[in-house]
Each structure stands twice: as C-alpha cells, then as structure tokens.
Amino acid sequence: QVQLVESGGGLVQTGGSLRLSCTASGRTFSNYDMGWFRQAPGKEREILAVIYWSGATTYYADSVKGRFTISRDNAKNTVYLQMNSLKPEDTAVYYCAARVKSLRNFGSWGQGTQVTVSS
Image: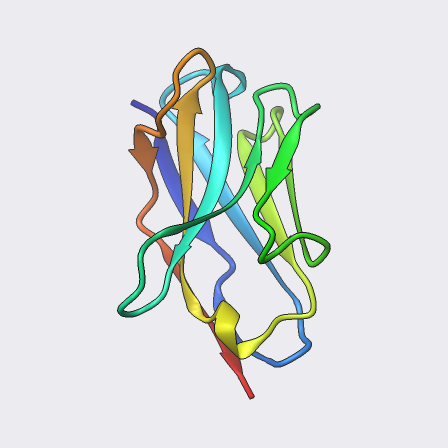
C-alpha cells in the first residue's frame, strides 16, 4: 500500500481559503487515482474530489464544485486540494485516499487533517 500524509488544515474565517496537501510514499504515485474526502462530527464520510492518475480527469461533488480544486504533481508525489470561499459547513476532518488505477475502491488513507471554518 501507499502511505499518505496530509497537511495544511487549520482555522479559517468564512470566505477564506486553505490548500491541503497529501504526500505519498512507498509506491509509484502515478499508478494511483487520488481522492479527497471529509467527515464532519455525526455525519458520514463524504467524497469531495477525485483526480485520475494522469491528472487529465477530475470529479467534484456538487457541494464543492466551483469552490474547491484538486490537482496533483506526480513529480512530487503530492495531491492538493485548493479550497476557496469556505463556509462553516465545510468544517470537518479532511482525508486523502489512493486507489490503484485499475480498481474501484480507495484502499489507502491518510490520517486526516482538521479544517475549521469560523462564522
């Protein structure tokens, strides 16, 4: 499995921005599709965005479309989530995950990073 470490979370005011990073190690990064998820207290985990192994294809959940941007740098083994126009309801623990490009499910997960948006 690939090992994943997220960073970049923190406290931000409504309308502010944050950029999350997730660095991978242990396997060939370009063999993996990468995703960002979040989980708020008392809620189910929510998929936010996916970027396919080459970076050419992305997917966004409706809740973040137009505000969040996923990108990746295969040379740095890193995937990013740029979050703009943040809202209090974006408060959650954010996780990155990896999926071998031929498979359906995400099998490797980071430890999560807290994002708190104050009103």
